[in-house]
Length: 381
Image (cartoon, one colour):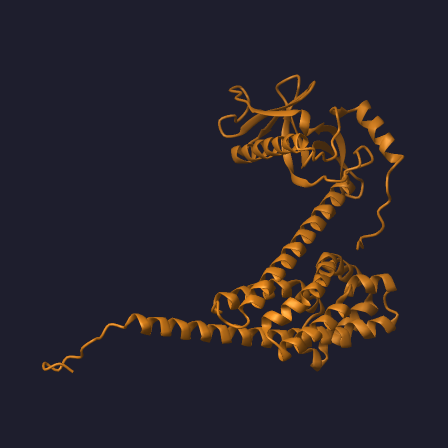
């Protein structure tokens, strides 16, 4: 206290600040380690619930065929065995050493993540069976299952690798360079990040494949085979195609891929469904995009117009939403530039040589049918 009775505040010394920061990082480090262990034990309990109350009994209940059972649970049993070993290793050694040692086996999650959407689809289809639905409801109502639903339990492995990545990176950030586990922890964080990236890429590729498969099924037999090596889906949506004779415009559904742009007109079915008839296929490497300004066109002051040329083909495309037209022209132009760059560097994805319309499109589709590969069901490894 000073002579006036007021408290005197002393500035914290640099060494005190270092000590405080070190203590803060150590507290954070212990908290992350505790979270890792706690969530790992909870996660393992959830995997055991799936195995004990759903996977194993359903295998012998004869309510679904073996292939449906395989779609539902994939390689979940292998994952559970790996994680049992991971927890045992964590309890016997350091976090860094445990994850460095088990990282190669965690690649099993790629298969599971890749299959997860099929599992959910299969679960929805199987729910049409009253016996299957009753079985799942009975199991979910068991007190041991603690009110958890099967679909919620099945998604936990998909979420686990990203959680490992987050926890290991946070742990590494709060671990001093001179710590005995720092090097192993750094290696483990890098390995898990690679696995997470690998899984995300697998999921992305699989989702893209499923999207192209859905687009193929949305067309009648007039469309060419869309599943081709190196081809990726980019964008879809309606645009108005201005008649070549001028004046009128007709709405068509456009599909942009990494090497082609195709569009179709709707074909309404008796049952209320809708298919598309393929009107034209344009190879992007021969295409060019340019903006167009048409003062006489309806609502041209609010919409957007652009021209797409491909050898002898020329399309004037319009959207009442100016931003939509701009987005389409930019995406198509970007895809054109990329495929041209890829060809210059000898990366040559599938691409037709000429625009396909009418007779040439039918001839191309007929030739493709000779080499078509049948795609079984919805389950892919």
